[in-house]
Length: 247
Image (cartoon, rainbow, N blue to C red):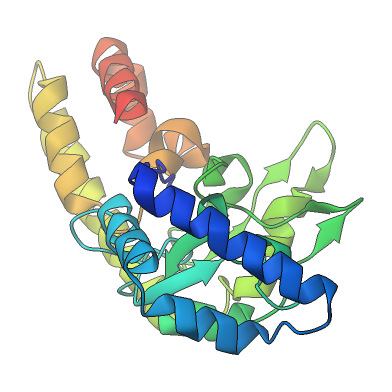
């Protein structure tokens, strides 16, 4: 899972989605709202077609699912499920791009704590504050906080809802990405003065699954060869970190 920067819709489409939400809210108040029928009707119109296009651009060149980062994103996903939360159905900030498998697995599951989502929203959260990666299994797991002596609640719930630790094909994809990134760092360590810009470009090309966040901002910096890069070339590490944060 990677951080996603939300783009803006055109003003015209944004206004049209606001009008759709007002219509849905009005029908809901009178008991006339049929969520799926309302969404399917609006889905054929230009504002949601633009939303889908912008989401694909947000997902990057490979248009990967914003949850698993492994499969191709196929359709608009509602972070707050439109059933039972139709008040969020046409909100642009509630829309993500996900693959068919993640959409099927998540369904209407949406854990809350005191009315606040305890599921990672990749468009507002840095996933690696809550998640960890196991290079041996390729699984995504909840991040452990040694100070609190507990696992991240948001990480735990996200792993549980999306089954991120129980999807073999996805885990194999993550392992392949990690092996490619590991080789790039090992090659850089063979050089007396690695070039930070070139290394980061190589890592970006090798990273199919958003693991750079784990390497530079998560617990990956404690794993070889990333820990070796940090120890032996701290200036290169810092330059890569700052450049990554700006992307």
